Image (cartoon, rainbow, N blue to C red; front, side):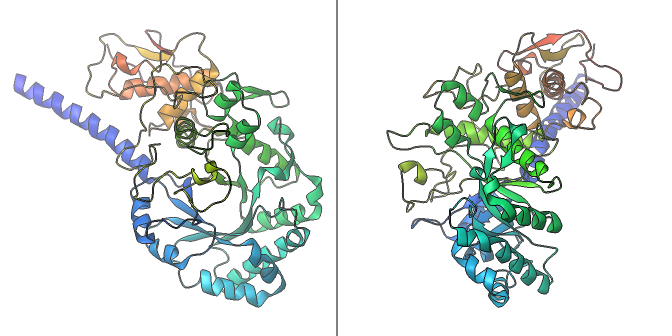
Length: 485
């Protein structure tokens, strides 16, 4: 009888372990919102075939090219990886003035490879509106329209979208996010562009870089805000929303600007965002610690499916910058130090993109207050998972301690929901979404991890922001899993 009980217990332990592992695997293979930029201003990059294999070993599901290198497009055939290809700024005059040129471009760069190579978007130009080149600006929308016409004539119009990419400088105002508005100097060009986006369902693609925001305001509190680390937040009095990170604030500023132009149905895509891991001695912000914190915490935030305050419950498609360093880029050293992977295909630093290892290196269990040169790589709470640990004898729920800041609680939510646990009850429309507060959502998420991982008190720590309670926090319509007596 004892042997049978022991066998049953071991089987339960194994099932729990397998369930937790399955969560991680599913998470790794279903992250269509995580992409990466694949720049080629370098002379030491691995062959495209090696890069294709590397991508398949990660949870990266989309790749953005700045051109249309056929070797790369071919190498990605039959991988399922979504591919964004680009027409250069120099191509815009020809594309705008000659429909035959646009047809030839599509015939050469799209038709031979699709659908085996999963081309999903063509970007016509990069940051054209803020280039200052009025001739190029005036030709942008006609060029985009001609590429769309060429796709339509090739029966690809409903399958591949066309757009362009913008810097954050297209905004006249961005703070607070609710006041986001486009520079009126773009006038009719922006109106025509948004009308095209709206009519074709193509996205408005932007390049938000909290790194540059910190570089222009290098205070410790700004760094914490940019790195998704504990901070006091920034309050938007119009919406009564407290923003806890710069990424959400920048994306929502674009959302507000689009909405104010009547483009509420136009989706946002983050075409570039990243943080350099090294720079010159006079550059503020580049370091491995900061790069790992930004990219790692951004990925956790995206995986949590929390969305932004103005777009909750869905993560915007986000292309990290960049896959590799580009060693021939001009400018300061930081321009050549954004790569997540080295040319030998090893990681520059681990942000949890590998399918075989979903969690990045754990940070200190008590995140320190960031300084100008922080040593804390991340604000993600360290909560070890021990699925085989015995449950406590009394019913218990893992809940936030009193007095814990919203930023710490949001980090807990991102950690739990970003590691494959089912957070749908606290997403919009879920049974536990209301009350829509960080405190309430964190309580559910923290308890979810604790209960799923076997009820081990070690799994109710969350960097010392959690405590066990015998009071059942469930309420009408919302059930909190609880320990058994």
